[in-house]
Image 1 (cartoon, rainbow, N blue to C red):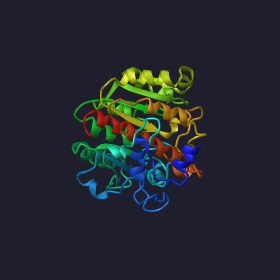
Image 2: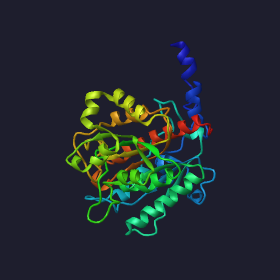
Image 3: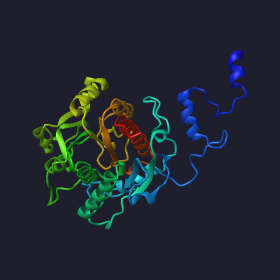
Image 4: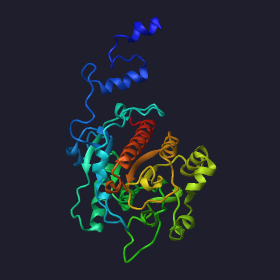
Length: 343
């Protein structure tokens, strides 16, 4: 007790000696033991520096957080256009990931580069062109894209951008496979991005695993099974256990480049009610985080968190979970970039 009193009784909050913790503290404390107030300043994704200027050529940004405020592809309840703003309003996520032991902002330059600049709020096809162009410029600059949607149709143009030169694998957490066909003359809705991505030659179905699948629309998703995707239903996650699901997912994606797409309706609506197509019986938030953390060491080259619809969640819990998921994907992408020799 005397030793602890000598060491800590009069120590300031920023006096940290453990090497790992001291590294985090050095990023947080810039003025003695004073920390920036989480509720002050401009709201940004994960409190990253606001760099809308970088959206021209992404110079100096290693990992770019960006918003996709568009929900023209929904089949029922709209509202995901407000997702990026809600996630930016979350005050306290990071900078330290205690399970993985990572501080991504201590490894690379991370910035919120703003939202995709849409030419029209009414034209879905044009919106997809705008997204593909925006993300394509990131990829060309060597910047890792980490987006917040928006409805799940946004993943198609993102995959077209990152899979332009070689097909990528995917970890997809969702209630729905999103491999449906054309409906009412449109094949670019949020229920079909991954069918089209496979047919476009940018997504490798044999290196794609879909986790948390359930609900009353499975008859629309035969493409997942026909193309060779691995589908793990929500009830199978419970039966297999999270560790076995992680092992299976890692076996599927192998060592190749892999994208992570996280739809918040993959979670049970008890945890994330603020979404357009809620399905009961989903994953818990702790299961989802464990699944993501289990991907540590995989070659994660980008990701998105989609379908956050704040109008359906007065508690803001859905945005809180989405921000944490975004941070986990950021950590995975930063670690993968480091392993590739990027820093």
